[in-house]
Length: 320
Image 1 (cartoon, rainbow, N blue to C red):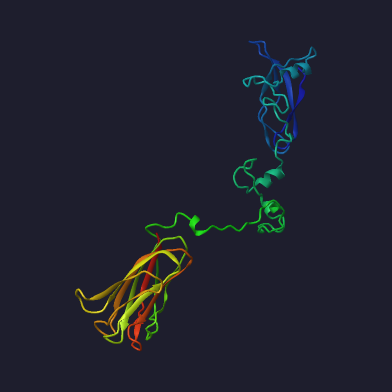
Image 2: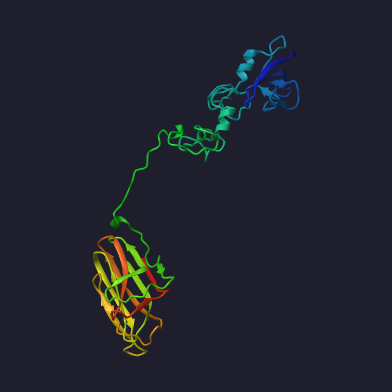
């Protein structure tokens, strides 16, 4: 039998290798085979292995012993043929056809390299930027700029705000914040309320706040007590209770009063001992109708007689 050449294309680089084949016959079944002359695996010039079987069924030889091209063509697997048929597939773009090595549907080496580093699997549902496009306006690794080609269709940021009444999910039963004094405030000798510097917090209209203050103070005279109050912005609800120690333990140990307006205060009358630390308390609820600041305030009972607010005083607050 006269060998003939059968071209086999490499699916990776597109190189074509000629495979020597002859027509053989199965002595039991009488079926003809197109059989590869050389044994062992085939490789293309680029070193890629070729998926070439040892033989193909369905071929026949011409009377002179050469391969009949018409018979060879008829042994090729046509479109729609059963997948179990092991005949050589026709080249083409059908679901049962084999694609040639240079088929345009295969990505080129450059295209494969461009996909390197893409996030996820690229596709119509997953647009992506490649390393090359990220560096389009400069050196590799350069950050995107406003005039970078890949940002042509980017939307500029649009300022967006909401009124406080639209905000939901604020902390409830938690999220407490504490502010404290780490140094004594200057002694107060005026009877008019002054801001207790460092013991304040911002408030937003429409948000409920709970607050608790522990105010440590000293008096320079037994007959001089502390005045304690607070200022708040316009409100829908505001109520606080103040307790100021004035004497030793017992039913008359402190003066207790209420705050119901901004600038309101409760006045203590004297202390048990001079230059001794005592703690006054103030706690309540605020629902402001305007943005602003909750500010603790204090004063002395007797003009010219000093009251000192001490380090360690703390104001705790939370949105509820």
